[in-house]
Length: 493
Image (cartoon, rainbow, N blue to C red; front, side, top):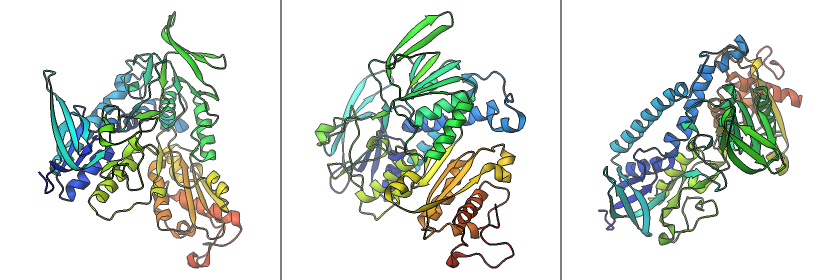
């Protein structure tokens, strides 16, 4: 029991990335900490059904399909001719088991007590734990905490009109449970999850159709990058039905077997082997009895918070997907750390505006900083520098000749404003630009920096030269190159 009479200094509900990081940070501050997870395995959606499985599946697809090397060996190249769901999930299951073990060990060595139970508030400081033993018997106990962190994440939105069965009609939470690789797949909802799965199955040769009410994919991503993604999707035979709304969906059985007929509000129909309904996610808050703590949720089950991740009840924090955008594992981890630090009065900060975004589609997309649309709307004068992977030796070696790295920088000060990448290794490559953005660097930083050869990181130097060439001026004197033959703007590309 703590000095104030509570069982714990901090109680964390949910064991995903946000909950893990909050619990471990509190434990490292020598606070008595407990974590509650209703599943029999820890890790939340991230490890068990979301980030880790889908990204591991992506690597399995890229390897077994030979997708990365088709530019060198032709469109028919493949490592395994007949790829099954078992082939794809073999690697996934191994990684998931490993990540669960690593997470459990981290919590153990930091002396975080873990409860396998369903949590519900009794009052703002008391949580009722409902545990189920191996015989199915229920038991309850109440625990108290000075601070509570809600990190329950989200669950796939399920429209009552959609006939989910986990076989022909799936949500993003059960798409990996398919017993066979479908010949055709229709993805309803072109958010990040929908696009990732659509491009993944298309790379396997599945005939994919994407349906979305919006007229543009992923509007928060740079428009040029999205144009390139759309080009790649269409090259992989993906059909885009944008500006369309699903009015109905029904399982059918015909001479081709068990399939799904999808009705569109425009009168069109799509018949497909399987359908992935991926129209958003809702906060997993339904069983928490939040009213007992004086908390309210929005219409998507999410909890509003202030910049320190406090809810309307100051000692109750919420972090991760349950608070909404950007709903990324990386940002969720940081939110958990910051919440724990704030709860115990430990100074901590993070540049939220410079969090990177990674979209693990095929091809991969990553970005940090401002987009062209944002800069134009804000009236910020900027210029662009680009480097195509086909110009870089490493791009040729990897077989990716269509990738692009794009730098946005201020027209007058040359300060870096944004980095946008599509292509192999984008989510790794973006961190170089993130570091320069964080210290307020100018585009000349890349001109003056020597990168290993051959690497994709050279794209930064090529893009910087391209941007300066567009200006028709030499690099700023304060960051100019040392006097060397040919080492001025225009010396490269």
